[in-house]
Image (cartoon, rainbow, N blue to C red; front, side, top):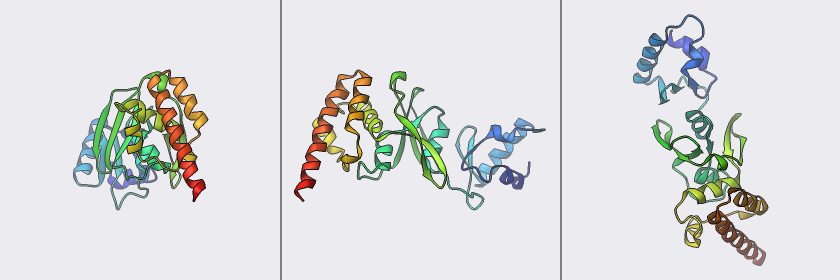
Length: 213
């Protein structure tokens, strides 16, 4: 396969898998060697085994980090600090894109940055939705409430008042407290119930402070 032909096939794809290129009379071993050469020459970025993106200037669409995360581990969704920052609920820039999955935990360093996948139990794999993230690209992201629940669940002492204050949660009016309680009850974890009580109190305090302005 010529590189120009590759660009014709995948040029409109933010990321692509080798399976997309195997239709027709294609030798898989030859294709893998070509992909390795193009990666070594800088024409492609390899994100993980079998997952690639075109490099500039061949890249028409810059992949959004959340879409990349979804494609790196199928069945995962973006959550924790990454989702909270996306919704404007924490003020800090988040240098790592964090997702949750029922598969084994993993980390990848890629040309686009670092990706972390944290393990949760199957009964907690809920509370996410497909959202547009950039220029028509869509990704599975936890709801604001579930992102906070996941973070607390995965953090030792995540229900402590000290930790929740350190998060510097803001714009808490964007949280649906009823849904937050529902998520905690659904989990059956006392830790999450305690945390939600604290977050609800922080939300009331923030609301009262705004009323005084």
